Length: 254
Image (cartoon, rainbow, N blue to C red; front, side):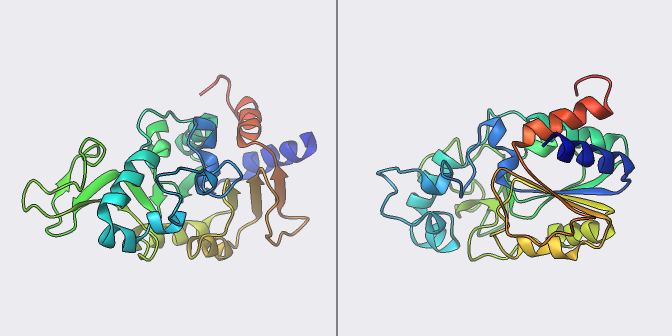
């Protein structure tokens, strides 16, 4: 393990155009559960929601057909207020600050990368920090849904307020996708971390990478093709890897 982390640090030092592609596992060390692990959101048993498939509860169909159920689940499970960035978020922000990291492509909707100070973040599944009226497009505050009950209504037209989150059955935001793919194509090093690579089309963006090194960090094995000479797979807790990177690159904790 030490040798793998040392190689990771060496490649990061050599790189000038890093892109980080992250999933739910990036935020688990902040206390936010992921989706598909044994302790993830999809494996939690809640009597109130047990009769539903987890994917349905976060789907466009649920929002339209059973909005009361959708918003009850959303308020209980998707509220990331009060959570703080962890060492991975903070080190990535510092890498961007010193000019090594070009962009973050995230499947997360919690906004912790921005809270840590990252500027170029492509949120390909949207964010819980933005809400709008499905009828007139009116924007409301980031806490609006969490601070209301029942179906949140637009103060302007009375339509339903919804989160700017990409639900199942919905297309990904075009601007974010365009920026993410362009950044990955230009990267010399791509770090893929904390994702099962099971959610498409987002997972397919990894195959746009044509740079020097693909580095995969995950607590569980992934079925991804790697070049043994150019690529790296580290099966470890993300915090462990980024603490080591922090110690190697920066004089003091960030």
